[in-house]
Image (cartoon, rainbow, N blue to C red; front, side, top):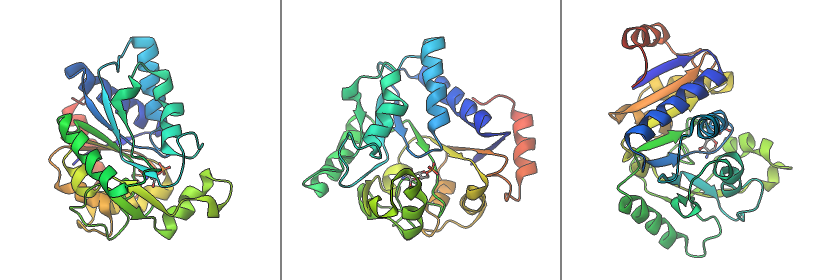
Length: 258
Ligand code: GLP
């Protein structure tokens, strides 16, 4: 895993933006995996800036989102459909038909999940998957104990995740208890990962995911098994990493990200 320690959230987001820009320059019809939550908002702001100020185009880009709450309509302010529209899609030139987000209102969820996987394959697989991390070390909604070879499916949220995500809802009881999420097996098939972690409250999860043993109890740790993961952390999230000096030294040797 390539670990980059950025000075702060802003630098983390800008560096992530320059990686997406680089991959898009190499492949204009990039298949981009997207995440929600507060972590990637800065990256999305940067992508919008690159689009508006530098002409970065998403017109041939295809996107697949990691997850969606079950039971929320697309126009529910806390649905990931709404989040993506408001935080990215409405401000770039992406074609709505090229964007894919799990359908939280699906009547036949199993069939939906099977088709979602098929759609990813039909597009040639995900080239670059953006990931955040939950306080319990989860990626997407793959809570502790998820099978490390799981596919897109419904997952029950952990109590801690419900509490963490309650800040976006009026009351904790309003947080949906189940969600559709890409599985760990699905995520691991992406050709490259961009894992973003910021803030003190993520420091423990970050250290376990990056330097701890690979375990289904910290599902992000499985990324250690992927040949191409770039993790970008701000100083606070990196504060419990034991090998920070080495990561910084490595970056000094390799110069700019490619
Ligand atoms: C949710 C999402 C994850 C996200 C996590 C952290 O659980 N399913 O994809 O990484 O929240 O969110 P935040 O970035 O808001 O801390």
